[in-house]
Length: 451
Image (tube, rainbow, N blue to C red; front, side, top):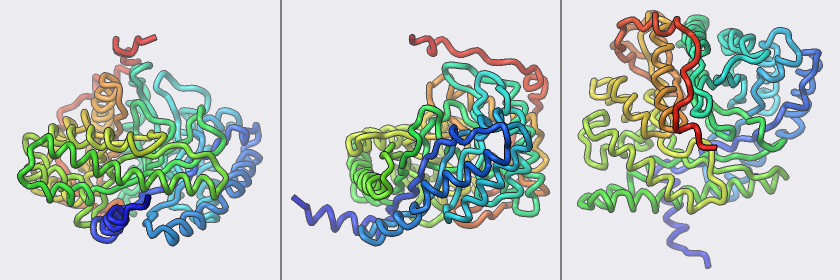
């Protein structure tokens, strides 16, 4: 039976607490678009994506109107483009321009998958694509890029780590006239999932179906509002409330995913449970942690609060969906979270504390703005540290860091929209150059031997 109370509660969550479907992401395999001629391959890509995704925007809009559920983004994730470069050779930026043309034709917010998977070494096409990333991100507006440089099973490719420090810095420099937007669309992963619907790290894994619908839900404001109602509850009560709230949020995501799948005649893949914040007041993961009892996010106790939140979200969400995947947990992107921004500006939230938090959160060091004169080796070392946390703990970690060209600690970059604004945060600048320049591969940890 339909429970009127549940319906009214959901309406209240949408109207007052920023509950939304953050994204419907269509994953599309491009393996059958590989061709020895790059121009032919690009044409096949354009034809396939426009055919499969032609109704994606309309379907999302129709569901939003019929059910009254805000659907913020409609996106596409594709097979890592380095795999197509391996077959065709040529300038990989042609693929980026083709995907940009597709995004404009269909009207999606982003296309993810200008990517390479190099956790164990470079295959044909990988280095060519990686070296083209700064240019590709500078000549497009809707393309997102990611590189997986490590995994629990493979260890960490330190040659790739060194290269990515240089690529992040170059991406900032070539987009310096646009608030260094390039690296805001670039993620460096360890243990990257194949079915993540969130940008900038989405790509369509080689083991995925030819086409699939994945949905990402978000409701930090809903969780915070629920916790406000138990000011005297103990920590067990807090965990219980988060679980129950995550269940309700995820049920809405399951409904939208199933409906989109049916209308587009595309298989349903997963629901990603992640609490993805925005710069809007009342839509902050940091404010959830503060509602638990912290004076400000970044105080001692922040990591414990985040661990509780992440675990409770997963436990509640898993019961609400037939297939859970992607990243699923709590995101902590500094520039995209009003509470994180405030904590970083006040100095309560530091890079070192954020790194500790990434051991228990959903992703990693995300949307962090650092001084423009930060060296490529320091950026590489930050990537290596995050990858080590992911590798040892068998979890996804990532780095999305923006060197603010021409800016120093105390300045700010304003990206606008969902990307928000980021205060330039101080870094430890003692040189790790000798370590980074050694190259090679950090071996996989003992806990990877589970066969």
